[in-house]
Length: 308
Length: 270
Image (spheres, rainbow over the protein chains, first blue to last red):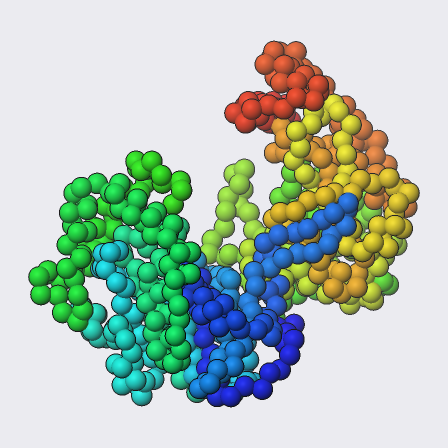
């Protein structure tokens, strides 16, 4: 019960990179793309039955053949500099939270199991990845918000491309909250003495509630990983794969009422670490904007809403 | 966190069989079958699973003017080496909960056989012969019950909690069988007495329980007569049931209306 390893590869100073689903599936897509691009090999899993309700049962002619659970798998890849261990969880344990994110005893147990594997294979550095809901326009390149689990990593993060710290985000003063396992795991990693960094790709505030991915942010996260790992990623396949999502986002945007869109257009001008042309958006304004967008979505006056 | 059990008695069982039923069930089959068995066999409650780990306890729900509270109770029938488990379906930690369901009878040896009881909503009329579908967790167990002429279910999709239990039982080397009784959709919210009787009749045969099912036969006749009266009074109800009897299906809104009419009629006459 718990961890099942199919093999025990000998790895050289491995780094662990972790992906779970979340807003826009930004982290999951980034990490899974990296795993697939590097042709990483599966070597173990965390058994799902203890964490999840099964997704599917297969019964044939009165015989229960199998139950399928959301998968939580480990992969490895040997590289020149550091070897890599990937962990891809297709679902977060959700007990006792209404947010849809992991929480409570199960999430803590899952985080510790992942770190048990990290420890066993000698990983001392962990990366998680997720979404940063931001006041940006979807035509603007997503930045990556990076949050380390120890002060000693801040200097290193400053050298990452297209990356900002929480203190660079207007009105945050270095404060924030990372929901679910992407955050919790880094906390547990800190407790257990691992270095950890969460890389969060920016998603426009008005797209956060849509049931579609946001590949632009995943791409920004991938660019940071490429720099950190000293590898080159060919994005042509990635761009091709997610072109239809970009089209859907454009289509969604076209159907936003003009009065809301006027405001959203101003987001094109926002840049970090300063916002010279716009007054800072207060929490109240942010809330109002989101309510307007939510109302718009609820009205369902977009023809293609069902396709989103 | 460990499961907390509350033992009220320590029965002297040996390799018991286990019958499991969930409180919310189509046609109220599982709770009614278990209540009937407990009443007729003189079962004694001997253990409960404490709800705090598995159910939301931020308050209590009220149904039919009455407070509801999660129940997970084990009963035993000493003379038959039988354990009966009646429970609400847990909201959290399903895997731990279902293992706990097997842990209790396993205190008294190996669980010989596991049976789960469930209703399955169907588009059949109450007057047509109903089917009992089965799901076994091991082929040899399926083979051993061939003489019962049970129809095997084929299904790929979201699993019911009974299938999850069956799967866990297989991992623990326990033979398991889920019984799925066809319930006409318009009896799903009421009691499907025919399906209840059918299940009891199977268990009676399987465990040599010598159950007297006459009172159920009377109730079935009464229920059928009540529905017949409604058919006489209400041409639309009669037309709908007639269509189902002829093998036709009904539109969703018509189904809902029929289900409501029959449920209210049966409730009124109770």
